[in-house]
Image 1 (cartoon, helix red, strand yellow):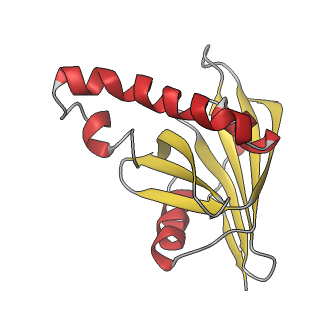
Image 2 (cartoon, helix red, strand yellow; image 1 turned 30 degrees about the vertical axis):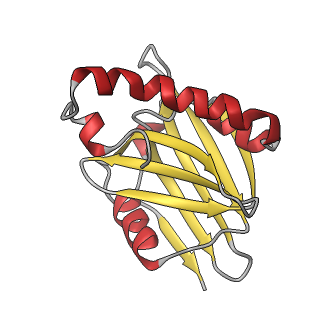
Length: 164
């Protein structure tokens, strides 16, 4: 994580520095918005705080990663299913192992996430998890779909698939 680090999330930074972090991140996102593809812009505006991974599927042949997340509404009474389909994914072993562990752990939640760009035209989605772990997903294209699910958490089962 570049902005929302574990130290920031745990309140370990000096107060003045901690207060600057969200402002600095959103300024960074504003600067990137003119060049952002629609899917990336939609993700940047989607609040994934406390989301659970419902399903994760990596296809190394097509270089696609699909994450299906359950995101609580602010009222806490219903949730939405947010499907993120990353194309042109660059994978690394540690990120995949962390993603597998978080997808299989029903207690694990996304604390914070960040969007960023690279000089080569790719994008990165960084995810900080509770109680542990973080990953960076490097990709070229992204689609985001959101659907209301009521109380889908009642049937949530761990799921990670790797199609090699």
